[in-house]
Image (cartoon, rainbow, N blue to C red; front, side, top):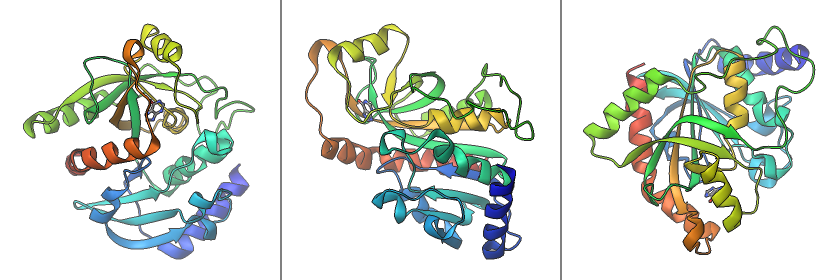
Length: 271
Ligand code: HPA
């Protein structure tokens, strides 16, 4: 790992000079507009960064964006990797390790998710307080990288309580519908059956999605505080399940995105 990491960091440093990002941002599918608010100083194609995974067509156009957001130095991933695309857990989480090595002190993550909780509706926002990992693999499996973190990382506060409170203050001031949620991660790519939605609700989930947890595990391993926010794009209420299409998910995500962007932007400014 450290040889790979050194090579990647050296290549990025040659491009960005001594720019030090304070915050890392990973934006979910259909939730990339926050990037438009960044005063960009450097934009690197993943395909030009050594050791960055780029095997899918979508990811080939991905970029790592460096710049200033609301007065703070950030690095943002435009284009996230999902397990269902065939990436390994190591590939999905390598960018988080890179961000930390570049100087990032906190990680911000967004995603689209389905609701399991009848009081959480399409278009609402979920501020993630905890998660249940139903992915069939773990990015920390294998020999532990002791330089990065401990063999058995603590997960008692996977999402920063302080940032959750700050985000609620911001959201309430803006009068947005927000909920504190437990996120269930599923490998996808199929959506859930009625029995699966019901099961996820019974085990304690409020929302379900196909991302986020691998990056959050690796951030916790390295002691990086995390804030994560979901846009609820569909309602997986098992007793009355309607078919959902990707088009609908992307449409709802686009409608609710400005609220999520505003919260993230304000939250970053108060760190
Ligand atoms: N299930 C899983 N992933 C999702 C969903 C869902 O209902 N909606 C958006 N991502």
